[in-house]
Picture (cartoon, rainbow, N blue to C red):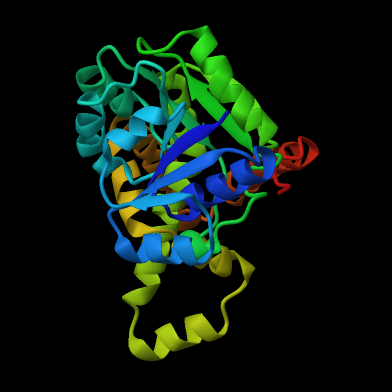
Length: 290
């Protein structure tokens, strides 16, 4: 790999640049970001070889283009890329939802190669100054099948992420979005909501909540401090799966509410016992490790 372009220089894009530079020392890295501030910070950190605010013909030299922006920017990016000669280029992305992204790619990237991808990694921090080269180490990278790529293209993208230390899985976009809805998207939505509820308490109570926050609430506030633009886009782009699972979650929550109202300790105990067992399985599988 000799030449790549990374579009979007936030936490993921800048971490990707650091990781690729570490593993492919001779690669030329081209940064594109609409934010001049992000480019300035990236340049001060020497993260790339060239820095641009717009997609231009220089991108045609890239073997791989990594799209690391919020999903709401994809349409314009795909439109710009559709006008370029990218016969020797694989376009890929890092978005957290896939069904709608693939639909958009099918519309704009005809006769281009696109491999949908998603590294399951991140922190609550954002910006190029917060990236680090080991962000993807021992984390999952999920690639997706679609009409715009074949097994050879997918393998090339998978191999890059494998070299960055990621564990690799390939699946269809529907399964990906269903899994992400329950394991990531809805937990973030709950976190944003519960912190929002706390913020609407009376001022004297609110200050005490902040003062006496236990680990559970601190975890919620950490998740809820994630980039709001990114999470707005995720919620809207994966809304079918999120709505379906959120309706089931609300139904389950209503049962818990009824049990509390009716002093149904047996129901509550069995519910908590079951979820405790699931948590223990997650620990056994090592899924709570960085």
